[in-house]
Image 1 (cartoon, rainbow, N blue to C red):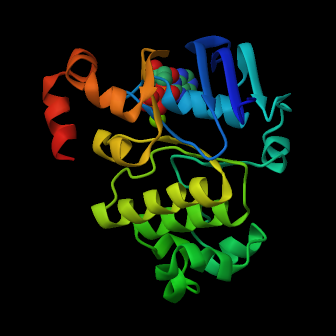
Image 2: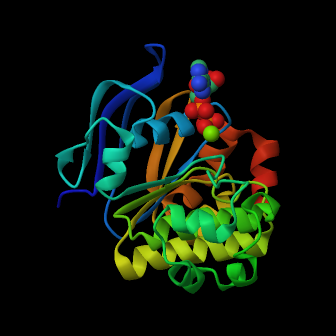
Length: 237
Ligand SMILES: Nc1ncnc2c1ncn2[C@@H]1O[C@H](COP(=O)(O)OP(=O)(O)O)[C@@H](O)[C@H]1O
Ligand SMILES: [Mg+2]
């Protein structure tokens, strides 16, 4: 089976200095894949390389079996959607205008996140962090991408909002066969919603497996690499 996204031996970085090394990673249609790892591990750089925002120095990225075009907008046209760490909502425009600019019917976004219904005419900058993330994810999913990447899906958000966001991406994977690749800090969320997990450490993939395999080797992997304190924190999170 050809993977929807196939990252093969990719090194990428800034000013020709690689910060991620020989990364192999794939996402199948209908799969939710989580990228985890400590700060500075290279998760965002990996996402940016896939999105076309950081140059690939070595290796190859294939999408639907084809080599990716280099320009980000051409990757987007091929069905690759990317919600980056900054959520990329236009803060001075209303929610409705943000959707209109992306050529998204607000009704489609509201099917996913009805709670945005009374927020349509507010400036996106006046929405809560959770509402902004719903707008960013709703806007992306409403365009029915083949692959959605979300960097830091739940960072700084309340548990209920996080639940809604994970529900929406899991739903897209299950019903529309959308591939989902997301960066997530909370291992508990990863266990509950992701099919597979990649752990990155110092720019390399250090562990790949199902969420349950990560759970099984949790004490070893998590304690060895995240440190005991963080493992306990993640347990509570
Ligand atoms: N724009 C940049 N220019 C130079 N180095 C960067 C840039 N962005 C990130 N880095 C470096 O690349 C490494 C990986 O960072 P990043 O991909 O943001 O990690 P993560 O998302 O896992 O926290 C870090 O050492 C970081 O300092
Ligand atoms: Mg990051």
